[in-house]
Length: 267
Image 1: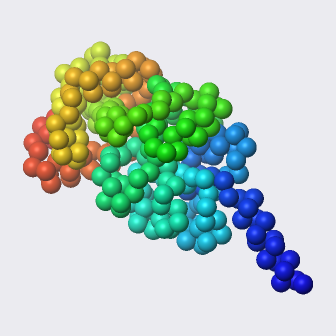
Image 2: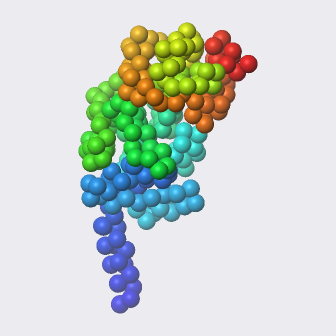
Image 3: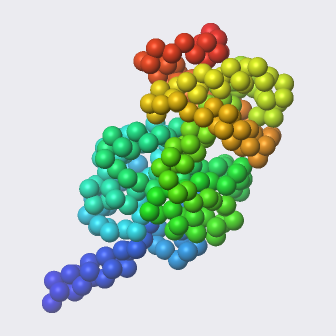
């Protein structure tokens, strides 16, 4: 009799949790995503760095989606350890993300280029609408609407690639140029435009190497500047800027790229 009750309890818990959202990494952005899905009435299951992902997957085999909200430097080990039953349910939200980052694991995730900021003790700040592509794009977009965070649903992988490169350019140009001049994005463009353009050219050459093709420079620059206008007082140099410069130069060295502006900043 006890055994029947235990089996029934497990069965009903599985039924209750199927359709839920797993969030791996409950930092500032992960917590926003979790809150957005909770507002739609979905159960949210957090997975912290101290938890065993494989064990969680045994407890919950069929969530509606699995949001990977870890930082960009932690993404690779998470994808390598991803349980098989969760692989077709992924939503990725990292910065410095490009298609090869998931394609090398034969994954086909939903991807959002996050253009809202969340800092401790502050509410969400939107720069521009966040583009989303993939099979979970609509449920993610609807969830974020509950928090008044605007999104755009993309139609093609090429559009997604453009948006990811755009975000990478924004982050790397502002962070790396900020190592030299500090200030805000509007000050960078209005007072140090030559530096900003030189860093843009170097970062674009790295992005072209990573995606394996030439990119539309004029359209990407215009899209980056639209983001500048969305939050003109955004500080250029985040705490991750030195590490980003180091990674950029490592890629440039591997690709045989000169990137003179970045090497000048390093010096």
